[in-house]
Length: 279
Image (cartoon, rainbow, N blue to C red; front, side):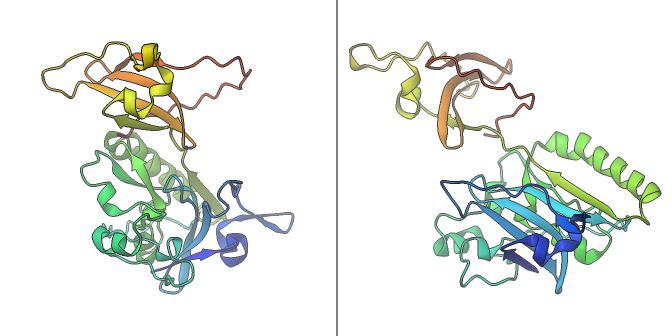
């Protein structure tokens, strides 16, 4: 399976993007001033035929979006074998072919890979959530090509198998009934969540949000639970910066407290999108 990292997928695989005023137009291709290699454009290809396109975030190790054309439902079988993209970690020597390789073997070559590996999903409690869905594939080749980890983001199992699956099915049937003979371009994207790291000790991992009388970091009370898994200490992090700390009650599913430093009013815009904590 050829999953080629390209300079501009509107030139290398333009068929997955709408043409506006005679110009192939993709969704936003992001940039990062601190890491010019963060976002990668991929033409996802199998048997020498491009099946869809993906913008990949190597920092969060998830796809930003995948773009594909809808050509009708085929009810293809699922491959259920996942690939990685070697060019993300070895641009010069990595082959165009998607590879199936053990995490251990891959990490021996690339100790700090730029992409998610299959083992990270094992016992994580999360599904490998397709962006370009198997259900919308019009051929077995296209269906197989969707099984790359560069086309998957962590999804809550009940959401992936419930509401999201139902939405994919409903959307597919509407497109199949109403738009099969039209040029239908579809983009599926994600909203990167706050990287909220569960930690063993606030005083070590995010001590800056707590008072420090006489040189001793002093968080509020942390409770004792006989099963030792009810309460979680979370360092709430975004863009590699810890913003505040939260002590969370897993049983009641509410925060006990959050701790932060007041550094003045920023008059920031309020976003309406909410995140969950995968750890």
